[in-house]
Image: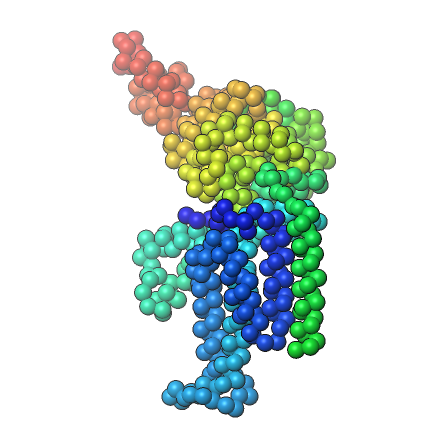
Length: 257
Length: 288
């Protein structure tokens, strides 16, 4: 059972200091999401994120994860906006009683382009950065350990929750519950899965908190790292350049375009 | 050494004490098993030893718990963890969730204590070796078997080098092989590192074999305290919600039938039962 998003590869991208990767992704997001035109996020996805994904040697997994994350959103946004965009006057096609609106289509395209950048950049970071490294890098740069842990462990808990959901599904299936088949059957089967999943997760919270305490998590000392984590002057300079450049670009996009 | 000085504790918003006037001393190097029905106060007892009471659970605490002459209420939990290690029932809940390999997971507590990397590597390697996990150091903690995961949970605590180990039903989710792995690891630790072990356990056969003192709690009070032989063969054990060992049950049934001599003590372990039943076959042992 896979319990983490991280994929170990021997790529140059993987050897970068985690904060550098975080800044690259945040800078791209800032520039892409501040732009009024949807062409900018789409272009950034193609000319920045995609090459970085290829450099990180995670193209197949990234494409798969992006499709899983994005497709349900994209389909629902496209349907809702083209059918029900408020105040739309131009329709380009009619399907039975429904008219598909041009304004809605453009809005949906813009939203999907931004979602694509958001999901693509986020997945690049998630799939190529060791969670403990990110946690330690954030702590090294002054983020309180509790916040750094929450940020990282919350993401890492997702695959663990998936595994727990699968074992609950197996148990319910063994008791005769139908959770496969038509859409309606699956929706009906979801309720007996959700209740034990949420309740068991909640009941674990206290024990998890105690377990962290038992491992000196609340110790008020400078933490160290088991894995060597090397930051360089060059990367630090690149990070500052990226931050400044992204702010200037984003401001220009907002003010000029 | 652990000393409970007239400890009474109630959880927040409850009236009935979870621990009731507990007064006892546990010597260094001993293996103490804690038994009792559900809600008898076993986990609360362990939480009090480890300092989770009163640091994690507020409530009302009367009396003092001293660990190596230190009052647990007056010592921060982050300092107590180097004296008392706590292992929970479910190993998965003890893993940080932020580490990808067994070795990294074991090092988590040392990172929090700010231990230098070289010392950390040494201590992690030693703890994994004690627990027989050195060959799986690079694997994911979630890819291990149940017994291995519980031994990793133990290793995660042992790296902190506590003198006292508190284990709250560590084998409840393990099969017989996994249980043996954990018990054998504990026994070798006790012998080599002179640790004190406090263990909550329902599997009385294992306790009879490994522990050298047994406490039985009932409604928060210690009602039986003695050697495994004294406590596990006690007539009140079932009434207190604790199952006697199968060997005691068999011998008691034999005694009720008049086969087992009433003046002979009841066995608690396999070897004693075998010896007892063997004696019954000898001419002087046969009852009319």
